[in-house]
Amino acid sequence: MWDRLVGLYIAAILAGFALANVPTSTIITEQIAEILQLIGGLVIVVFAIAIIYLALRALVNKSTN
Image (tube, rainbow, N blue to C red; front, side):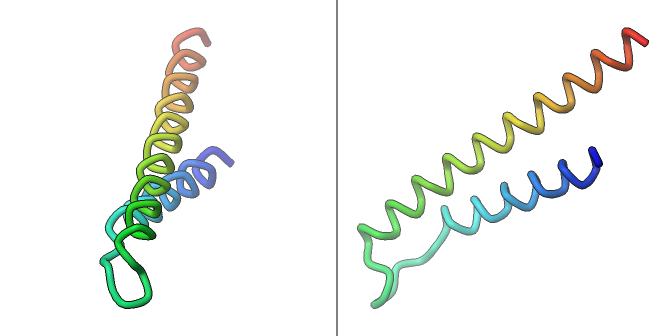
């Protein structure tokens, strides 16, 4: 279960990087690219914090057992 959750979070971080690096084109204007960059950055930070939390929780549980 834990491995699946971490894998999902890593996939979300990679998707955040993809959103943060969307190039501008005729369909995606600069304003839309800025919004996607903001959303991508937030996704990266949120899921990185979630992975750090899971790792710390696993570390604490392992040291107390």
